[in-house]
Image 1 (spheres, rainbow, N blue to C red):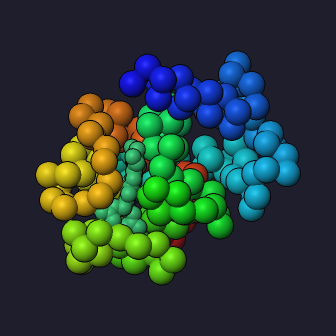
Image 2 (tube, rainbow, N blue to C red):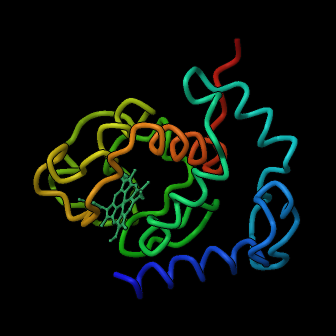
Length: 165
Ligand code: HEC
């Protein structure tokens, strides 16, 4: 567990190209390795502000540090590879278990709903009780505030576009 923790932290540092930088301060960092245009800081803040409550109050820095728990299995960038789990770009508004180039468990493939913040909140609290039979071996993120921050981060980073008001 300690080893995993270390690996996750190290991965995050690589992504931030320097542990001292906040995600805000690291825009443009990553150079060639960060493929399709990641949002700029101003775009991140605008996206965050446009999210429905409570997600507009999400702490993106905490969300990013919680996403370190997911990075060993998921990428979130546009066109990022599937790993143990599917790439999460565009997951909001996507039918559960519907990414064509990924082989899901029947539990997720047959879930029948479309991912939104409410479904993700329940899923991330405890994937294996929410969709019994899933092959996502993640114990769950039990603090509701951590889930708000993580979902805000996922929305901002996964290419989600708020509906026009
Ligand atoms: C140990 C690997 C692992 C970790 C850690 C993990 N996942 Fe997953 N995830 C998977 C696998 C495998 C699946 C496919 C599940 C299935 O088909 O039953 C999946 C599926 C998903 C899905 C459904 C995607 C779709 O296309 O329907 C979402 C959303 C998701 N994970 C989000 C997360 C988030 C957010 C985290 C971090 C809090 C996380 N996962 C942590 C392995 C992981």
